[in-house]
Amino acid sequence: MDEEAVEAEAVEEDEEKKGGIKKIVIVLIPLLLVGYLGATMTVLKSAPPTAAELDATEKAEMLETWATCAAANQQPFDIEGAEAEIEAIIEEEHELEKALHPEASMSDEESEDESEDPNESEDPNESEDNATPSRSGGLGMKVASGARAGEAGGDVSAINPVYENEPVTLNLTDAHYVKVKVALQLGYGADVEALGVANFGALAQDIVNTRIRTLTVEQLQAPDTVVALKYELGNQICREYHGEVSTIYFAEFVTQ
Image 1 (tube, helix red, strand yellow):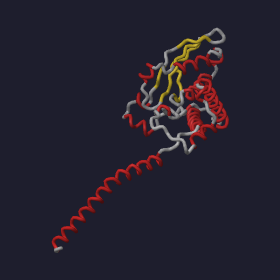
Image 2: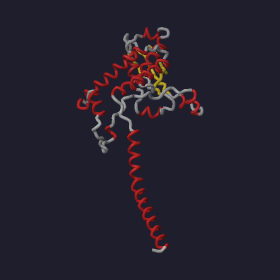
Image 3: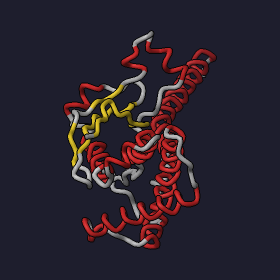
C-alpha cells in the first residue's frame, strides 16, 4: 500500500472517530441537563410548612400586630397575656376548621409520616390549589413611617388616609343618647374610596356601638372619659383589623 493510501485511510478513520464522539456528545448533553435540572429542583424544592410552623408564624405576626396597636393607642402591652390569648384564638381556629372540614382533619403524626415517606411519589398532575395554604393573617397596612411618607410628594391623603363612617345616634343605658361619628386611621397608601365600596368600617362601628351603649351620659361627660374610650376602642379595632386600622378618632361626639 502506497503512502497516499495510508494517509487517506488514517484521515477516514479520524473522521469516523470524530463523528462518533459528536454523536455521543449530542446524546449526553441533554441527559446531563435533565439530570442537573432534576437535582437542582430537588434541592430548591422545600417541604410544605407543618401545622406547628404555621401556628408559630401566625402567633408571631399577631404578637407584632398587637404590640403595634398597643403603642399606637397608648395602651400597656402584656406579652404573656397576649400570647395566651392568641394561642386560644389559634386553637379556636383549629376547632372551627375541624367542624367545617372533618374529612380533612389529620393528626400531626399522620401528616409527618406521609411527608417523610421516601417511597411516596409526588403526583406531577396535582393542582397547586391543593398545596397547604398559609393560615397567617398577615400584618396588613401599617402607619406610614417618615421615610415612606416622603414618597407621597406632599399628598396628605396618601400619607395619612382616614376612612370616615357615617354618624350614628346611640341610646345610652340611662335614656340619654349620644351622636357619634367614627373615623379610622389607615395605613400608608390605602384606597379610601375602594374601602367604602366594601363597607370597610362596619366592624369598627359595631365595636364602638356595643361599648358605648353600656355607658351613661354621666360617665361619658366625665373628664378624660372620651379620650380614654378612644384609645381603648382604637386598640381593640386595630387588633380586629389586623393592623390595617391603627387607631380611631371621634369626628363627632355629642351627648344629650
